[in-house]
Image (cartoon, rainbow, N blue to C red):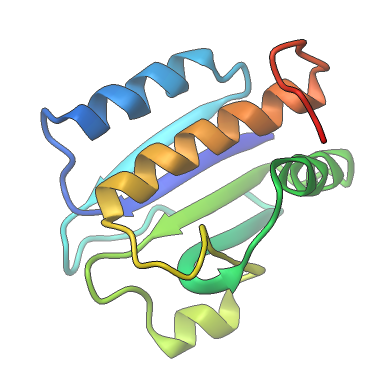
Length: 140
């Protein structure tokens, strides 16, 4: 299953970009990183079938194990692409929220979108490591 992170805003050369790159290199699943301008731009069409996850401060909070299990279920059910959308400063509109398969949050605090990108990259790496039985991750 392909993992596709679609983020608004340019990350440029920054500590957050370094973190995203570090974790992207570790992820063994196919991974695509797409940047869009803060407003406008065209979101690439999904592979079929796909699942769409919106990163949202009001979204569901999952443990790393729950997140890994969800990705594993989608993979095993034949989902070809899991898309993770990170909005600009104003987040996502109500229509997008209503159409998403999952609203995912990293806690009730508001996080800068560049930090969310880095945290998502780390959690995608951790989830794929859990599914692969990698000894680094310690559950519990």
